[in-house]
Length: 340
Image (cartoon, rainbow, N blue to C red; front, side, top):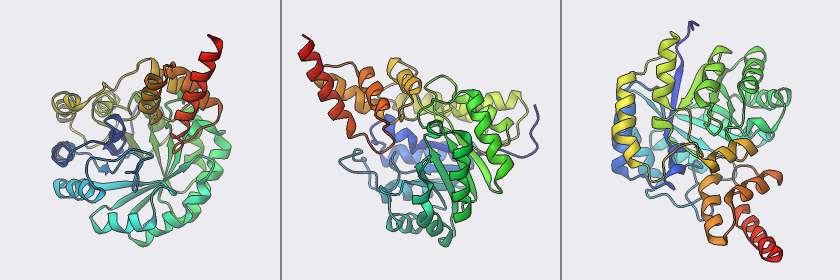
């Protein structure tokens, strides 16, 4: 296939990748990774706590570095790429956004659950008022029908978002699922359209290509797939496929290959891969950041973390409800005792 417009890459190594190391990137690592990603030609580098602005807390886990240091370090070390931040209303505030802008961030993605775009209005408008490239980010997009997802996207469009994303937070979408959602966005919105993949069903790269085929303008990826669950679409793998398909972009394949192999992979405390737990995330449709929480709770309470993930899926858990996991693990442990 051929694509006339250059795909804009939004790298999430320093934001979604935070989840995979419990938000413990050091400023030295942030500086090194920013330089490598920027030098490779990526357009936007997102850098915050994994749960976005304001995420460093007892509920979501404290980051090693302050929000200011994360953002300013990325800004200082990027010569060409814009630095972006994620903001989840209810976790991050407009005050956090004002600070991020002051520290040099120029892109903000306002993220809500796929049926709750209403809560993004003031934050999207604040981003626009600050002169930022302001994006709507509809998480857990598998949890609603394509037509209903479009209605939520139209709300974000009405608030002024210039780009709106289909976000596969659980890595649960199939290729047809992506096609139906992205095509509806392209046919019915006047904004640009983005796609964010997770690899829990081994479809991160394939789904990203399908999104591009349907007209997506922006695509998320990360070095070595660094991210929650089984990770995001791998930047180097996706670039390789795009090169074979003659899809235009600005990223140097060899540079991202080397950065992934020699820098990113050695930093991983837990390999970002499709194992039984990350596969369960995609299979049951659970938010990818729940993986480490479920793994720890399973060990602590002596229950199968797959059962924890399945139960929270049945309960309808969404991003930001990681605190449910302990309660579910305790209940499963009681059931286990009663059965014995």
